[in-house]
Image 1 (cartoon, rainbow, N blue to C red):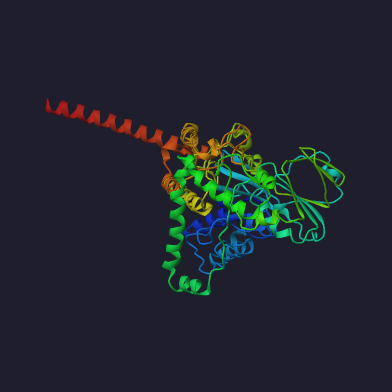
Image 2 (cartoon, rainbow, N blue to C red):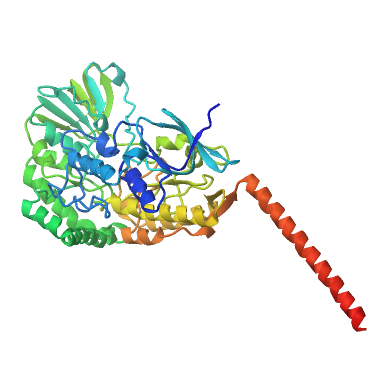
Length: 526
């Protein structure tokens, strides 16, 4: 039987988190690693989400790695194609392709207590690794609702994250289900070409204008010639968002002024009082993610668009029935219903030290030490783990903080030497989570009066970080070994035990000889 391939580090996923981890490993001098990617190209969510109008709601210069600035962003808010091209560029510049295993979906990862490593089964073969860095991301697996009769729908059905580009929507009756970040980009993009667009809205979002523009050639030339100018631009964008955090986390009542601005934005395009009432949220702004669009409301005001202020509850042939009993005919249904965020599918595939899956360990809610390490899963770390999400800034900032933590984790293993593993102590994990949840109590995400994808099935917020990005950076600067249990391979334990016994025996023998020598000396002196 062929010997299983072994690597020092296995990174799962090649989105921002996975590619960032790969770059950081190389910068730390670690070259014995692989990146396991289930698809045939890099990009993660920016590869999978290619729907019409797909773009980022974080400014371009802040939504990029600090160690890989891009002076040539074409717009202040970049489109999907530009972000995906950036990730391809990072992959090539840092020579990551030799490390990437495409079409290698992780099917199972099992902790091997004898060898202190992870046995990994993938769709392209098996291997083992001393350390696993899971960077699958929370926005990677689409969530489809269970709608009675959907299987019998005669038309086309797909999720926004799995857009069917072969299906022509022109002249079709299209139903859009959901009003999240994807939907408000899709609706204005397809409205001009479809015959009729029916939007099923369970909860209206707060929408602010998206002040997007082309970045001029002069600006790009300046950023190329003087990189400091791009750094200053990034720093300004970061600083503004850091100042905003207080309102979200400590003083939600101060967000009332922002609500007035959002209502004014709506009023400019929506003149019908009845439609305006349907589109006005009844919860505090910021409780759900604030969405940015300057085209969403104008599209809804067009004569070929119908807003159904109720969720889709049943499908009868080509007739879609809402929860309020209203009906609409459709040739295609597009679901913009989000992702498995608090119940990530990868958790079912990770088997820890006690033989339990990560999903079983997280049955009562996700929790991880500093958003990275779960108790009972030694040498396993996650990027964008529990309570590391943001409601108003760039996730790249949080990813880079977790990369710092990962780098120090690797250094600590080097210092410890031999076959060693670090397992987060349950007491440390629980203490960290208690502090996070205590801070969460007064945030807008918990007090704003909404039900969002930030909350798990029990209503606990296991998604968002209740502080600034600089606070998280400080909390993840280095690994505190007191928060971990050190594990040694059985063979090394035996060797250490024998060495200790040998040392003790030698010490006893030396003491005995010393005692005899003293006795002899005493006798001679006498």
